[in-house]
Length: 365
Ligand SMILES: O=C(O)CCC(=O)C(=O)O
Ligand SMILES: [Fe+2]
Image (cartoon, rainbow, N blue to C red; front, side):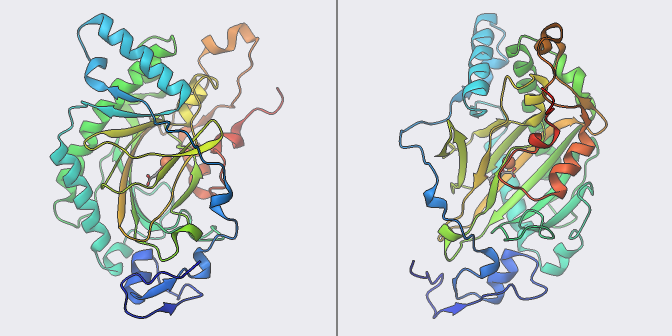
């Protein structure tokens, strides 16, 4: 594979991550003419060997306004569609959600500006424990990842307590408004999902103590990569919460598992890409699957994505709804664990291409 010269001024190759470089951004600032991927980011196995969908399948699109429609027929039709989307894909696009496009763009811009801060400024949030309310870093879990991922991140708790970095100055106000609006969309989706599972509309809300739900903003930066086919932005994983709502700048990179094959997802502008997380899979005792997805990188454009993970309250221990256990004939597939412990379990380990649910699956059945 020919090495690609990112900005065309000669070539330079790095085989090791220099000490003290804490982000992909810093690596590229230090070596702007980097033409080959440092070995610390190179995956030995070839991604192109994996099964790719050869059909033109695309994830379903749901019109959010119909979910909140006062017309009961429209609403029940939409609940049915939501249930089908959860069962067939675990992923769907949400349009007509009512969150202003200008706010979505401002949020992406604020995150871009955060990543532009100096390493020193970002350093305040580095090396933190997984339950610290603000943390930034690189890769997924750089202390245990054998090969580093081509990704820098910022993770901030937005609820039940709101947190924000102090810089850039506009971040706080934009994030406060954005996360509040997204939480409203997430709550409606959670109600719809509850109903689509044949449960009371507010069953999930009560079971997970949604009033005190943990909402985390995860901003991901994927700079252009000299040999993208050898690197990975974020490996296959499922999300730990209930519903994740994702936006991105206009650059694609997300791939979703569907029927055992990878499918590229190109979101339509001004929409959310939604997916269900592990805790919806738990609540339905496996009826809806929390689907594996990953982010690949490219050699041209900076990609920014912002995922808002909406989960149970930290101290809620969620278990399958009794309806799915059918008087004990279907034993629970997962053992109950406090969400706090589950988040710690997922975030403190390597992402190994499997869902964290594998770790709490009951093996005696
Ligand atoms: O960057 C992406 O599109 C995926 C991000 C993601 O899956 C996550 O942050 O959990
Ligand atoms: Fe994810």
